[in-house]
Every structure is written in C-alpha cells, then in structure tokens.
Length: 117
Ligand SMILES: [Zn+2]
Image (cartoon, rainbow, N blue to C red; front, top):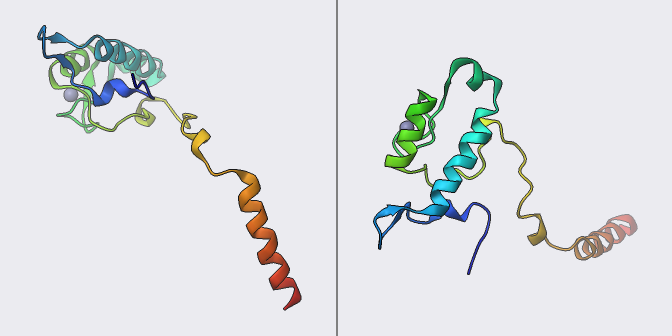
C-alpha cells in the first residue's frame, strides 16, 4: 500500500469495477474545494480558477461549475500544491534532503584549502 502526498491525483478518478467515482478522488475534491473556498476572493465572487483537466487553471468559473468540471473532467495532472487557490509552502518532501553533517564536512575541507592558498 502506498499512500503519499495527494496520491489520489495520480489514480484513475473512476473505479473500473463499479464504474463509479473513486472514493479517494471524491474526498480529494472535497478537500480542494474547502481550501479554495477559504479564499476571500472566492467567497466574494462565488468564482474560482478551475483546476480541472480541461480548464487547467486558466478560467475563472462559478463554484458549482467547478464541482461539475472536477467530477466529469478530472483534476489537472500534477497540480498538487494548490498555490493558485490559497495554498503556499506546503511542507512535504523535506525528509529526503541530504544530511546536514555530510555537506558541512565537505565545505570545511574546501575552506581550509582556500585559506592556505
Ligand atoms: Zn474546468
């Protein structure tokens, strides 16, 4: 079982066996709409940038229509950080950075060489 950050976006939105909407995907859409709906701009205008695979964040669409688009078109592939919808600096992937002590050791050696020259 592999569950990683917003893995639902990489999965098929339809369940091939039952031909219904994938549960993970449906939950993901709800999550997205909550994040996007928190923006004052969206609350005021009732519109938001549609991240469906057809609009691809290029159209401002009424909230009800965005629901519809996401259910029928699917999400734009790879749009995992919803920076156009009020999300920023999502903290993920930081655990895979190289260890600090290793790079510090390299730097010290370089510094010594430069200093004696
Ligand atoms: Zn759309």
